Structure formats: C-alpha cells, structure tokens
Length: 283
Image 1 (cartoon, one colour):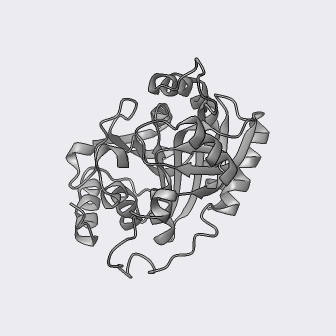
Image 2 (image 1 turned 60 degrees about the vertical axis):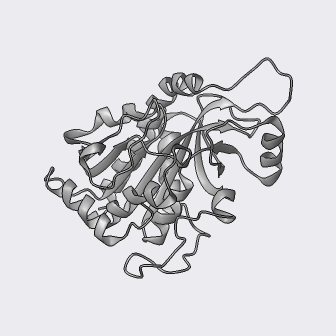
C-alpha cells in the first residue's frame, strides 16, 4: 500500500469531482472532537471516505470519516471531518494521501486543526495554540512522508521547512482572535506516533526541547503540503494539561480530549471563519 503516486491521487481526485460541483481553494482538516466546525459549511456536498479510492479511514472515536465540500465565509472549501493516524497502522504515504489529493484538486491553502496536550505550563485546557513551528522526531529519524522516489511534478526533492507555517495566515489569525476577544497562544507542536499518551519523563524532556504542545498528527500533513507549495496554517486545541510528575492521581484519557472539544469548538470556529473571511477579502 506504500506505492501511492500520481495515479492514485488522480483517481481519488476524480472520485471527488464526480460528486461535487464545488472547486475548493482551501482545505480544512479537523482533529479529534473538533468536527463540529463542519456543520457551518454551506451548500455542502458530503462524501464518505469509504467511497473514495485509496482514502485512509479513521477508526478513532471523534473522527466522523467524511468530507464536506461547500462554502464557508464565501470561500470554496474542502473539509475533512476526521483524519487517519500513524498509530492506526497506516503508512506515512497513506496518511498524507488526502493532502496530495487536495494538491491535485488545485487547493492552495491548507488549514489544520488538532487536539493536543499542553506542555507549556501557561496553557490551560480549552486554550488555542497557533503553530509557528514543529518538532517531528518520528520523521527526523525514520518514516518521513517524503521518503522514496521524488515526483518532481509534485514538489522538490529537498523542500525547505524553515517557513512551514505561513506568516500572513498567522497574522490574520492573531487579528481575528484579538477582534473576537479571546487569547490565542503561539508555540511549537511536537508530533509523536501514539497511541499511548506520554510518560512524565517524556513530557519533561519535550519541554526541554522547546515543545509547547504534543499530539499524534499534523506534522506529516504539513511536510507534504509544503512540499507541494501550499500555504499552511495550523491550530491546536489544548484538551488537557500534560502530566509531568509520577505518582499523581491524574490521568489523561481520550474521553477528556473529546469533552473539552466542546469548549474549544466555538473559539476555533470563530478563528477559522475569521481567517477565511480575510482570505475572501484579499481575493
């Protein structure tokens, strides 16, 4: 299943074109417990992931496994209501196929959301963090999604990642948060494979490395999107404060992640819609 290339990307893209008249310019990927934003999409065509060839289907609660194509704040969007993860057994090539398909469809901007644990001690559950950089140890030392023969028609062999998160999009997000009256943290997201949550020692080590939040997604998608020349913005919903001491009575659960998503969604919705509104005004 690792042998995924333009033929497979084109097949999935064509299956999408057959099911909608929309021509999306912005892609949105919604993480655990954050799928409620999809309900705001207008004039939507809905496609089940199972109906798309080669598409990775999530097995995780909180990921609906469907795509919506429509309009949001006047912008044509493709919204992924849930994503697959490395820990589910998919390869990096499979995980990032949706981003490649978006590229083939002509999508120019990718907005990613995820549920993350707060490593930065100033972060509280329910906060939002705008990513300005990331740490991807899994990809740095092993299964990078760009590993293997490079298709020059999709992007360069050695893509620069020093500006992974678009400066103008980040500024728009800051302005939207200020106008809406809620705090928007900024920081570094670390991507681990999961599915086990982190040990206290691992949390302390990640804090020393400069990570502000940790999760199990996003970075492979960012790498492939930047390889393909897309503009990228990503936001973490801080669902829990990570545990950095042993023998505590606290524990981290997936149910906690989903529950706090109800607090995060209104702010995240306002943020995404506000940035889309500014993009629409630019065009």
